[in-house]
Image 1: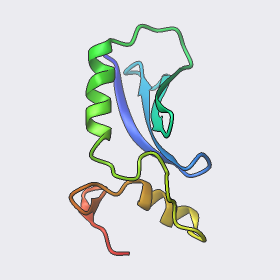
Image 2: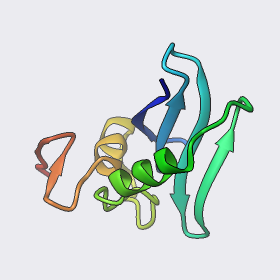
Image 3: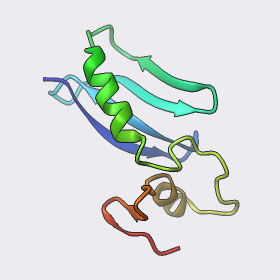
Length: 98
């Protein structure tokens, strides 16, 4: 069963979905930037289009997923939390306190 986890990529300054084969093997990374959505395949395993669309829908709640307007001078922890900020004002399910 294919599954995914959302992670903050502080080096690339974006939120990513790491898609795995259900046994921990990373098969693709999905992210959005100013140019649109990107699916970077690591393995040529089949990834259902329906799953990709579900992940995109899930990620759209994260307002800073594209990394645009990132705070200058933020450390890695601050940047990771900023990338995880959701439209309801929470980050990782907790109230965001800037």
